[in-house]
Image 1 (cartoon, rainbow, N blue to C red):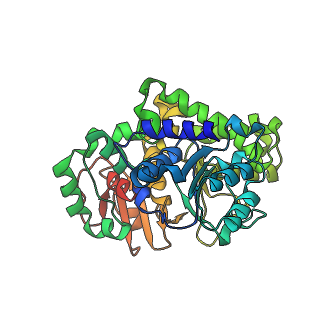
Image 2: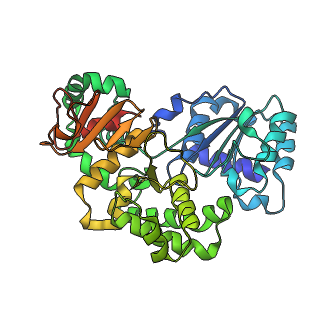
Image 3: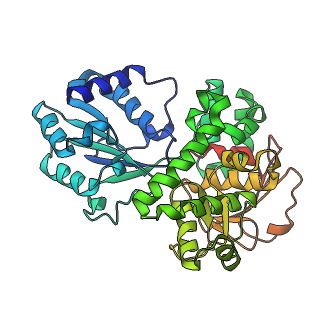
Amino acid sequence: MEELIQQFQRRIQFVNMDFVRNIMYQINWSARLIGIKGARGIGKTTLLLQYIKLNLLDRLDEVLYVSLDTVWFNNRSLLDLVYEFDQKGGKYLFLDEVHKYEGWAQLLKNIYDDYPEMKIVFTGSSLLEILNARADLSRRAIVYKMQGFSFREFLSLETKATFPVFTLDQLLQEHNKLAYEINDLVKPFQYFEKYLTYGYYPYYQEQLDLYAMRVMEVISMIVEIELPLLRNVDIAYVTKIKQLLVIIAGSVPFVPNVSKLSEKIGISRTTLLSYLHYLDEIGLTHNLYKVGEGISQLQKPSKIFLENTNLSFLFAHENVNRGNLRETFFVNQLVFQHQVNFTDQGDFIVDEKYTFEIGGRNKPNKQIQGIENAYIAADDIEFGHQNKVPLWLFGFLY
């Protein structure tokens, strides 16, 4: 255990505190059991270490952070670690990558029940199941979802300025005023293209020239390791999932023809629908359905988008379609906190209330004329007018 303590304290010493993400202040850290799930590489580990450094630095003797994929666990158990930690007066336990540890759900339940004075925070893959886990942690754990940087967060990082988070209602009602306030501080279009290209994953700050390679490595690890581990996907079918992802990326937004696609890839219709569902679960795509359609493993999506615009540039390179990029950005920034559905009138319906048409600066009202609560999210404009809202402003929702 001393080895783990030394590793933890080294990591605390070097964690960067220049920028703290907004989710830090949305989590109820007083809860006894907290889960944070999200795609690999979006900053879960940094969030834990920053929280410790901000709030528990004067109590480090009572704190332990450990990643469950460390080799330390090759011949030792998590229960042994927790027992020893408790004997040493431990109160705050941070467990990273819990999905890498076999039987994690039952163990967390046991730790929660057997050590009532210990607070536990754990992180895991987007595929992390709480509700369906055998131990049923849903009654004990508060679970938060984390995703990559919003455009607002990217702007803060790049300019060192602080920008507020807006609610969707606030944004739609006051978009002209809000846009003027932001433009007084910074010119968003100086940074918007950079964000679309490489601003979503936190590690863009480290070595930008290696960014695309690192994203591809993350995608490979997700598909080759997490899917087989957490969804029992046969490793022999991993190449077919990668093939499916490339096909989707080549025609995003993708309207799936299940019969043709299953024939092209060489898998059954049922297997194909499962794989489409998994790609959404794991944070590589967003699958949209019409209002009222059940979202299930065997329900065909109406439209499929890549999860974020950085993936568009990764797969399509210089052939990225501007219209698709706009829609991918809009869906990504909205779906984190809102329900986004496909609709025949306009491009999207949000929270079953607001209809949106996405386009350029000259996009007309024709497609949404006569629809209540309908808006145009327009690219290439700094300021909006009436129901035309700058597209970039939707990057301030989280």
